[in-house]
Image (cartoon, rainbow, N blue to C red; front, side, top):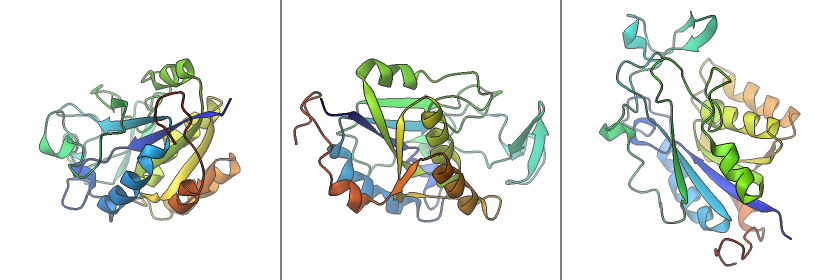
Length: 219
């Protein structure tokens, strides 16, 4: 039987695209690439940052500037602009993202007292989203990750996935990073490679026959 796979589309939301509250340079440029590849997988998950007003990661809570780092409950925390507030226009998934192949949307970061980057576990490293059980239940073995931002939500999702025993590929040209602090992109890509996370481009993905008949995707 072919190894079952899943694509995780990470946080393609208006606040992370140009003009948004926490814009990632070129964030919207990932969308045509993601739309091109998303039907190639057995299962597709989209994630969505979904913060309550006054979330602990917002710099505005502390009278500090965005992107400063402070210690909160013995943990270093990057302070972000207010972003992806529940129900706000900025929290919506981008209208150009094709949701047709998406089987499940995971909302994360909705605890006001815990930040959340990974698709699998929040930043306290205890609170789970439940995604791992969904994937284990389906027999998924190989996870492909794309989206925003490379050096935060994509990176932490990939590292948690490999620790959970999944085979992991990051589709690097379907991602964009914030590089905060400066040099973070180079650092996290090096760390992912050391953990045997594969870094590929979407053309390599398109050249592979990924889908099986198990979930009715066809070929």
